[in-house]
Each structure stands twice: as structure tokens, then as C-alpha cells.
Length: 241
Image 1: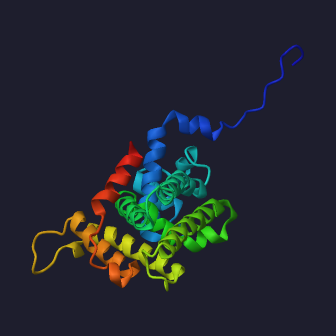
Image 2: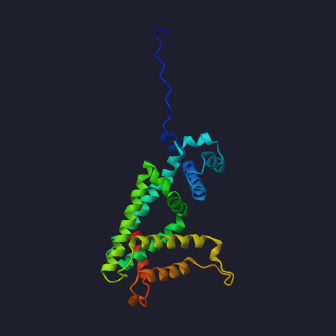
Image 3: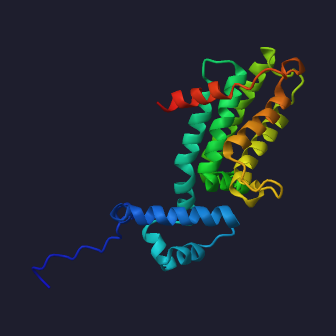
């Protein structure tokens, strides 16, 4: 009608406005998604499964996350950056390679226990991350972490602390699997022995695996030297101050 102002077209509400209104709900969805991705794998988990576990309609999830990929980014991006930062800080500590290797092991064991879903997804969905360009930041961060770990091993070899004949690639993979296994064992019923009714504490498991780790890397002539666990734990504590 003449004289009336034209109506403005309806505009879709930006996702950021929706998520900012209820950040707790967004965090709850991400936590549930992390549990399911860790249990079944990212690609095998459906949006409907996540919605059912949260107790909402599948379509309502998109008020908080634009896509399922966005949920995965929310779970992985910040934690990946923090994990890389911790690895880098330890690799650059002004101490010898053995102390840095063990300090890194302490950090990783506690990280595996505290953020078990993140690390399970990181391992389980490795091929997915490699195939999808949007997740190259994860592949790149893992590569940088491996290079920093290799640098520590090589410096230990050059300093006469570690065996000079090590295959660094195989050693890094072996240590990673061994340390991630500590957290799996700690959280599972396998931490109980039929002839030892009390559970093994995390401290006991750490001591045992440190002994195994040093037997893998130390020169035979150094096997009897004490394990500098207390000093390495203090290095980690100083990083957190």
C-alpha cells in the first residue's frame, strides 16, 4: 500500500547469538559428543545419537553447532593447542634430555587420564583427520609434537645418556602407546589383580612404566642410576606456576 514502509526480509539468527545465550548447553552437548566419538568413532556416531543422549531433538542441536564437524572442532581444537604447548614447553626446558623425556612422560600420563576422550579420539580418528582439510591443524600439531620428541631423543643420544642405536620413530611410537596404556589400565578393571585385592595406584603404575621407559632408552652402563622422578615432577610443577 502506498505510504507504507517496505518490510525488511526476515534474517536468520547467527549461530553465535544462539550459543552465547546458553553456553552451558553447548558445553553439555560437546561433552556428550566427546563420549560418543571416543566410544564409537567420529564417523560412526550420528547427530541423532548425540541428541538422544542429551535429551533433545536432533534439529535442536543446530541451534548450538552448525554441523557435526563443528562439535568435533569444539572438542579438539583448544585441547590440541594446549597439549602441543605443554610438549613444546617441556622440550625446551633447560635440563638434560633424560629429565625432559621423563617430565614429558609425567605430563602425558596425567593428560591421558584427565582428557581420556580427547586422546581416544585423537588416536581412533587419525585417518579421518588426515583425509579432511579442515582438520589439518591436528595433523600439523601431531607432527610438530613428534619432531620435538625426536629432538629430545637425539639430544640424549648425542650427550651419551641414551643408546646411540635407537630408531627414534619406533621409539616415539612405542613410548606413546605405553604411556596411553597407563591411563587405560588405571581406569579399567585390569588395574585389579586376582592375588592383590587392592588397586594399583597411579603412582605405582607411573614408577613401573618409568622403569620400563628408561630400560628402553638408557645406555646399559646407566641402568643402575636412580630414576629422577621427583625432579621431573618439580619441573612440571614449576611450569604450572
